[in-house]
Image 1 (cartoon, helix red, strand yellow):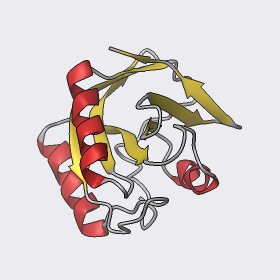
Image 2 (cartoon, one colour):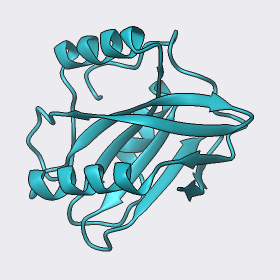
Image 3 (cartoon, rainbow, N blue to C red):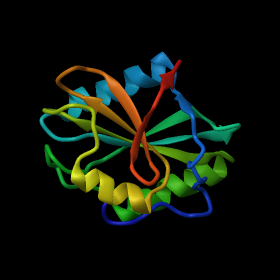
Image 4 (cartoon, rainbow, N blue to C red):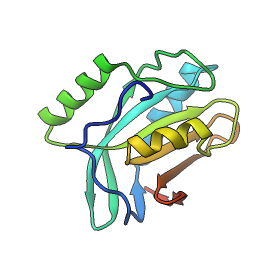
Length: 149
């Protein structure tokens, strides 16, 4: 994501967001992607909808981390264009950004916080140490939100 910010047309304000719904099968896809990309960070875009302060993920779009780094991720502009075309074709929205922390906790890094400002969607992070998922939004500060199935 670091190269570009998400398209404002498809981003929703998440200031009042209460929770995100990600199915067990979607989590399995994301965890497998994270394991396959080790030792580097993995990344993906989450498609879905936002209604009544609840983000529902209906599809996971696995992306390539062009940084090939264990501490950073970047999705290429070419891949972002493809992601947005796919979302438009499927009449869905980009509702979240996923990435893994292969060797640390599932908490936003200082770099993540910087990019959360320009990409105001739910950020889901998977820890390669604890194998858990956590979701965050950036309001005046970082806030963790619950993940439900």
